[in-house]
Length: 95
Image 1: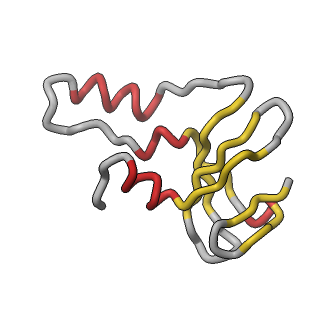
Image 2: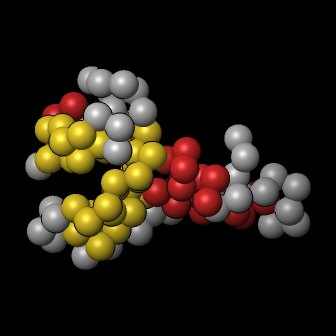
Image 3: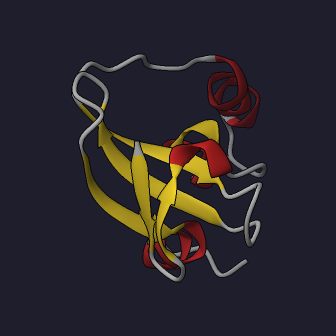
């Protein structure tokens, strides 16, 4: 599988490590009334979708960047690759 890195161009997926659902970018608010339940769900509950899914990948054997890869889990087709920091900023995270 080839991942088209936004900065470095096409790279073999062997250079990357799959790190899970891209929803991990959206950490719960620790000051909310439901923080304990929210962090439990954030840390332990995962979906296993069939079809298109946003995933976190770490470029371990390269520039050590984090990517959000939109990939079809049935066909391994990749439709989009973005830097995770850009996705986090789009979602309102400043850090």
